[in-house]
Amino acid sequence: MAKWDVLVLGAGAAGLMAAIEAGRRGRRVLLIDHASAPGEKIRISGGGRCNFTNLNIAGDRFLGKNPRFALSAIKRFTQWDFIARVDGAGIAWHEKALGQLFCDGKATQIIAMLMADLHAAGAEIWLDCALGEVSRGVLGLDVQTARGVQQAASVIVATGGKSIPKMGASSYGYRVAEGFGLPVTETRPALVPLTFSPHELEWMAALAGVSLPARVTGGGKGFDEALLFTHRGLSGPAILQVSSYWREGQEIAVNLCPGLDVGGVLRAAKREAGRAALRTALTRLVPERLARHLETASGITAPLAEIAQADLDRVARMLGDWRLMPVGSEGYRTAEVTLGGVDTDALDARTMAAKSVPGLYFVGEVVDITGWLGGYNFQWAWSSGWAAGQMA
Image 1: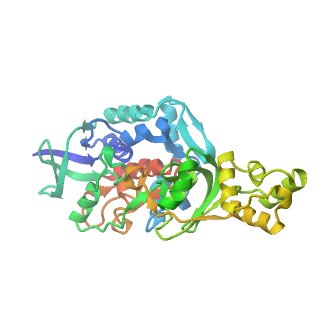
Image 2: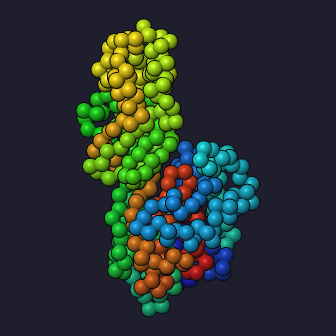
Image 3: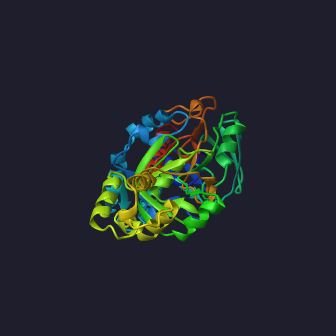
């Protein structure tokens, strides 16, 4: 039976960070993952450029049973701390909308930086190594692996959630927690496109590829970002954000022209071009294909000059408060993260340690902390992994 100071299970963002930090403290560290390469979610994130953090990290940008649980780790290892590491590695980056930071080049630069830090810290990594049961051992915790039982004083579980199963995502981390009697909150796909009934999809599919700025509200939360029509329903950042708050049976409200006086635009169009069709006026506000759909949905066929003011007001309300009823989401197949996870009540916010199991830690997505779209989940991974690495 091989013995280690620290075993880290999962070579994603949180696991890599935890292993690096534990190794830097002189601990004998082994990082294990069933995948053939480390950091696969890092590699595909941000369109291949890795949205590695956000300048606007704050407690209200996280969800969970107790979102404030995230603050301890995030305040001690901040976005600025991770940016300093990126700068130190000579990785060029840029800021996009809403404080999102991306690599100028490929996301693999972040993985290379973390792997260099891992090796410099003296940690060992095993890939293509299946993980099994975690149990109490004589000197700490035992982990069954494809390369035999590994024993350690500390085990850090960083195996993520259920999102994107084709990349190997599973409920392994939750099963480890439950095996030790730790509670796991309800899990569900988050940051995921929403789907609709066949009746709605019939016209949505015709608009596939149309994108525009919008305000989407659902589950009591609203976001001003892009909306995208697809063959399967609605996507785009605004929809992905709302999906974390939306629940089945709830409507979403879509404002296609946030900040604009739609009624005023339509009245001006009526005065200036009374012989034009309604869709012509609507194309001042939204893409043409969407304008044609809205004209059809309104039931108005008369030219602008013949449209009653009440009907213009009705059209304005359609654009400003369009109500839609999703029937579900695309699920874990395309979800960027998993909402829910190991109950934070069972963990120490400062160390990420299980309160009732000495030497057992949970970090990253496996924990019931989920961030907004835009680098927040990566920062939670860096910060929680860093926190566990200081103590394990």
